Length: 117
Image (cartoon, rainbow, N blue to C red):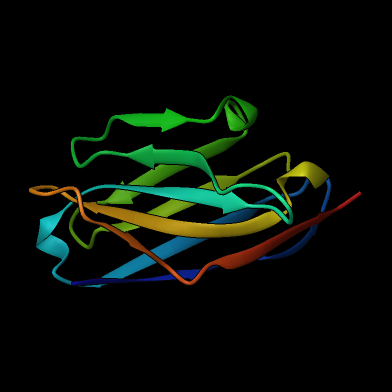
């Protein structure tokens, strides 16, 4: 089992920045890819960015050039640096981890990001 705890959300004005952190615990040796998803009110949860253990990354088109995902492989912590935030980035952001050998997915409890115009 893997437990994920997010931190770093909050309220920020448009154009501002936030940095989200995700701290895993438990069987972290089994984790391969990690990432961030978000869910806005009335919308489906969507991928924001993910990063593999080897460092390859993938971003949603809507955040390319503004958000950066990074990972500390020693601790398996994952970060999301969010710059030039827009009101449409407002959502609950969830950390995600996928176990390498069978694809089992784990989720954090979510952290609220609110961007005011």
